[in-house]
Image 1 (cartoon, rainbow, N blue to C red):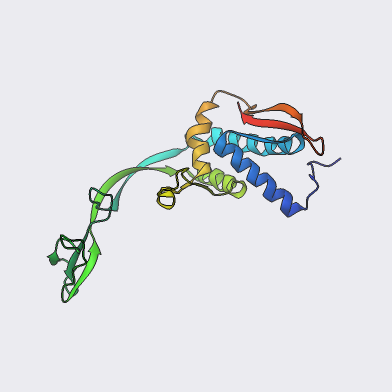
Image 2 (cartoon, rainbow, N blue to C red):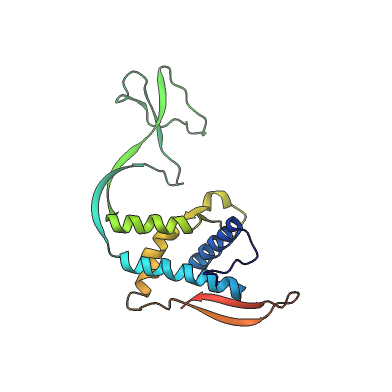
Length: 202
């Protein structure tokens, strides 16, 4: 007997299909698919969530100093003109004049102004870093695009699904031993009569 369902696909196609569906389940919390696919996706998702629950607190908090670009009231980076030969010498506080036109200064170059900020970051312990790599072998990168047309490109952001597993999903199931997902049957699909189900996080 086979250990997994072939789903009528080659190995590479099946792997891509299951990775996509697991990623969608972790991102949205539920997916609609056929019963056979749902049972395969459920196996993978349960394993990832169990791994996240085991390693969710396995990190240390570290203080680091980071350079952050200074921004104006519109959210744009502040730039100034400095001397090419002596970067510590500021020739002009802004690279634009009052009308918004770019200012050119002889022997000067435009640079972004940075501030040093202290941040607290989570540093993974080796076992959590390994767990993250195991998750990233299965999960696809997901990009969230805003619904509105205006500013869609600027509002686009990458979602780290492994981090979502550690920070949002794992704490919900900390006191639960397995059974993180459930399958709810809907009806038979028109056309081929396959049983459609909803696979969701409990």
